[in-house]
Amino acid sequence: MERSSTQQAFVDAPVGAVWDLIGDPRRHPEWWPEWISTECPDPSEGCRYRGVARDFFGRVDEHDLLIESREGLREISIFCEGTGVTTSFVLAEGQGGTFVEGHFAIEPNSFAMKAVGVVAGRRVMRSWLERSLENLKRAAEQAAPAPQP
Image 1 (tube, rainbow, N blue to C red):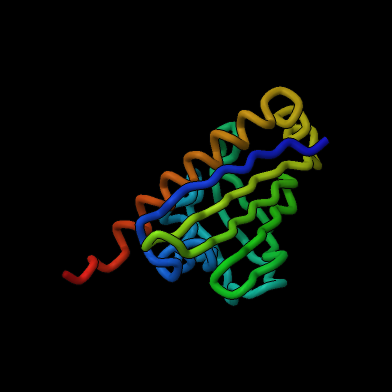
Image 2 (cartoon, rainbow, N blue to C red):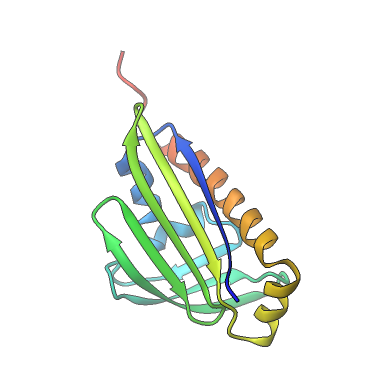
């Protein structure tokens, strides 16, 4: 049974600055909670790569990931094969910044992840996505060039 969360945020930075952080898994440790490092030789659709993150129990764990889809500077979907978690982000330009819609879903494929899913799946997804969007907003706004007078 899938557990998921969808949330939106406004980032006061251009789409390109937000995409630079979302669209390249090598930059995910800069903003994604619990993410430590990524080895991704070619951040394009269909790319399989490895990442190191803290799991739901605080342990450091390696993950095999797949960029399922990647469209321009607008959308990315990543699947974690070990946890059954799919993350996706959609960007839209507007009001001088970027609207971001994030969606995290878990289709547990291990006993530990099934336990997380049953006990606290939606709450965990909601909290993780909320922290991800807050960190993304902070990182993108700090990296964005200052507006010209």
